[in-house]
Each structure stands twice: as C-alpha cells, then as structure tokens.
Image (cartoon, one colour):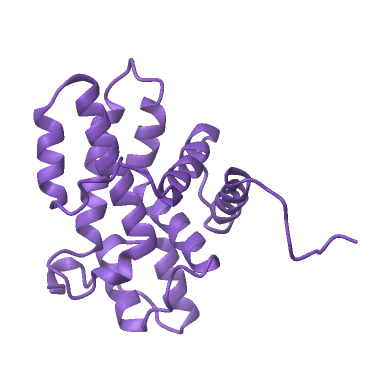
Length: 195
C-alpha cells in the first residue's frame, strides 16, 4: 500500500501545482507561458548552484542601471535577473523588508521596470510574458506570497505590517486579508504617510 502522505513528483510538477492553485486562489489570469515562467522562476531559486543571482548583495538600483547601460543579450540577462529577483523577494520575503532602508514597493518598482523594459523587445519570444509580468506584477507577488505561506516559508505577519504592505503595493490579496481580520483598507490615506 502506498503512503498517501508521500507523493512522487518532480520539483517542476510540484511547483506547477502550487502556481496553478495560487493563481486560482488569487483569481489572477495568466497566460500559459507566464505560468510556466513562474514555475521555472521557483525552480531557479531552489538550485543551490545557481549563479544567476550572484550579485544580489549589490543594491538593486545599481544592478538595474548596469543592465540598462549594457546592450544585447547581456542587457536582457541583467534585466531579467533584476525582474526575477524583485518578484521572488517581494513574494517570499516582503515582511523582512520592514524597518529596512527600502521596502517592498522599491522591489515592486524595480521589477515592474525591468520586466517592462524586456517587454519592449518584439523580437523576444518572451516579450508577451514580460509584458504580463510588468502589468500584473503585484498580482504575481500575491501568487508567490500565497505559495510561500502554503509551503511554510512565510511567517504570520502582524496586522500593522500587513496594512503597511497593502498601502505600499495596493495588493488585493493583502487587502482581502485585512478584511478577513475585520479591517477595511482605506485607500484615501495613500503613500504619503508611509516613511
């Protein structure tokens, strides 16, 4: 008799199930290629030998500037690295930005800009994927946050931090979580009160 608690599946199959489930729970429509891209993004971050994010200790704005100053395939690789790193960090580690010099909105803007820059290359087979990632960046952050919580990667954040995160990103997922806690998000406050 097989143990029902043990499943035999590849990491790609595991992440595919997680991404599909999170997209459904977040009610976010994503193209098949974009969902596939998210699965591969998660696979990149579980590989211990991945050198794609080796320069992650350098400030993101410098990495983005260097990407924009380069050209050709190097520029594409650097922009993709900035976008992917921003998306992953925003989805899995947004709570760790609390009381840091930069917060989740910084990563969101860097990721949106990097993917937006990549989307303007019509000759690129992934230009539509990058366009969708840029346009729905916060929604995809919500998808990764959902996966992080379900896989035990995220700590339960306090309500004030959740509200602050919602103010910074406008995340519908965070707004819904606030409503579930009995708090009605107030968009009229805006970002001007966040320091």
